[in-house]
Figure 1 (cartoon, helix red, strand yellow):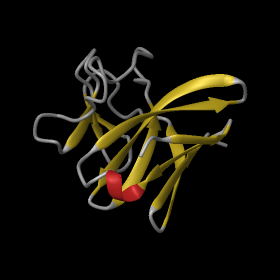
Figure 2 (cartoon, helix red, strand yellow; figure 1 turned 90 degrees about the vertical axis):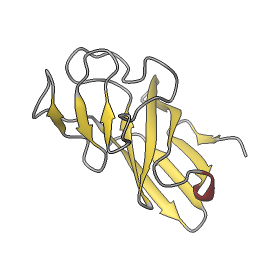
Figure 3 (spheres, rainbow, N blue to C red; figure 1 turned 90 degrees about the horizontal axis):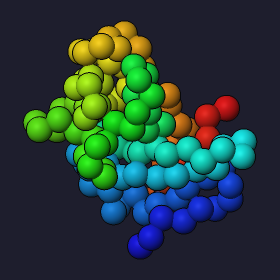
Figure 4 (cartoon, one colour; figure 1 turned 60 degrees about the vertical axis):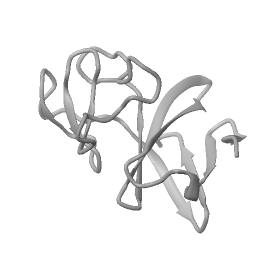
Length: 119
């Protein structure tokens, strides 16, 4: 199943296709601006973020869809090595310690996931 854009501000996906510990890139149109983001399944709970490091504004994944540390416990910025909690987006190590990734709105409804632009 391919991700679908349900409108300019939403992205939808089959929840069963994103297993715990997996991530997926996505793109939204937020207020006329293309926003790259990603979603992560943390033990059956989904969190989505804008794919931009708060330190330098670069994408977290130097290689497509490589958002997790080797032990898969944290999100990592491949440019500067900043480490973020998966469930909150809080930077816990690196040059942006204390800053957070920008959240996207996630709704899980049965077998469907929907990600929306931030308000």
